[in-house]
Length: 312
Ligand SMILES: [Zn+2]
Image 1 (tube, rainbow, N blue to C red):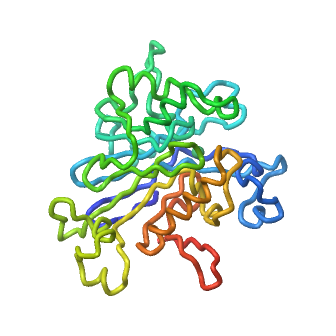
Image 2: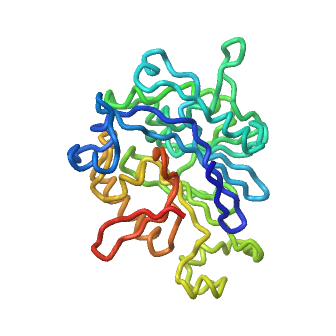
């Protein structure tokens, strides 16, 4: 299991397993002669996609970002994607029970990102998997999920969110909110119109920020300087971002390598530029939702201008 200490926060990758995804769908307009150098495909042209959730222990709250594919897929969906359903056993391996999760955040509401939000109980009733958690999802996503395009309607399964909205357990976000101190969301349109990245700004482990002055915030406000080492290396090593399907794997770090699933491919490129403009100079740890091997890395531009991902 992958663990990382980000300042005063503990991060862990929890996988819901892997699933087969058509290589063409995965890499959009990029020809197979190019993507097949980075990612292997089987004889049916399927590549392997991961389902990476991020567990954040802030010391105060236990936060789960994304809940994978879950265990409620229809037989038809299982034919395409299987149903690995590994998240709960991987959560148990960290020593955390589902009722200890305080916060669940979904970047968007496609079935492979919010599947374990809910489960069916013995009577077939949909109940929250994390009974004590407050759930959060983008408001625009939830509205879109009720009138999706024919193109991506199959990706929205109402049992993953509507019962939580009805019970008041799921709250909707406009984008820009801070959910708990150090964990906020920012809208990055492209994959969908309202998908949100989850930005995690931890503090120096021995010098917790006073009030609002996390190191990431300091980076945006140069008058706040926290640490000599930060200044010396010119980076702020306590920020991570779950950028979700904007950059689903390390093979997608190039601006033009988007997925066929993206509803607004030109916006994907613009959002990636906007993300890199912050994430590269501030050395954010980028979390890759669908990378089966490298769940997080630092993205940098090498001397030739090529994007490279360096695992921590
Ligand atoms: Zn996805």
